[in-house]
Amino acid sequence: MKYIKQMGFALAALAAPLTAQAEQEFNEALNARLPADIREAGKMIAVTNGSFPPYEFVEGRKHTGATPELAQEIAQILGVEITHATVAGLPALLSGIGADRYQFSMGPVGDFPKRRDANDFVDWVQEYVVFAVQAGNPQGIVDLDSTCGKRIAVMSGGSAERVINAQSEKCQSADKPAIEVQSYADQPSSILSVRSDRADAFFSSQAPLTYFVQQSDGALELSGVGQSNGFPSLVQGAVVPKNSPLGGVLQEAFQILMDNGTYEEIMTKWGLEHNMIDAAGFNLGEEL
Image (cartoon, rainbow, N blue to C red):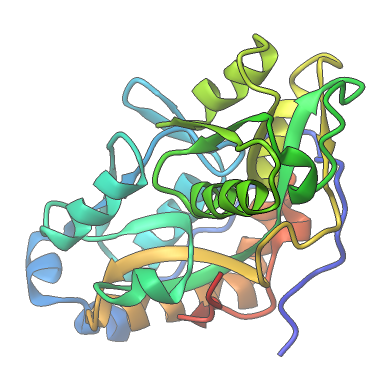
């Protein structure tokens, strides 16, 4: 199955006005398949681990970006209200779903087999992991092998943290200096560490890093683009409790948005057209 659209690195004008999305048709059959507690309450809470532009921007209680816009369309299809809650970091997001404090996360969150012990993933994004570095790349960070002895910022609890820690061990095994791994709870703090010269690079998903580079007025650039950087084909998606009927319901709701053009419209609006996949998937991710 083909998942990857043609890669490109220039974001479209964010939030550029497009034709207003048509109201989605309520799907009674999908509503009937929702978990009973969600159907009876008429609402569910989607949890996020903080700002993840351009998928999600969180300012106070306001959520904007591709993820909340897609959630709004899915809410119409399912006939329930979707509200948003924010926690600090991915571990708190996953544990909150596991403890039934939140019904799901729209994500996108990296889909890896180790995360599927307690969760299922409804995949709706293809991602890549690269570096954001200072303009001119003064530390010469072009791939994982060039990170030995460098200060690398990552999101706490994320897959990039696991990869960069494994790379640090590899550096030491080759008698090279270890990586100084700096773990942050959110994307803005991570990118600020590079801009303020407290870190040499931020290792994370290409889509948000592209956004931050474009917003940096030439202070930052991408590096390591077009390489695997320790990752297999990387798909990301919504997170639901293991074996919850909500997973299949969300997958079909995403497919409706893909089939009627709403998914493409929203993804393109936020400069994510190169991260689209052809069909909503279920637990597609490969092990690191």
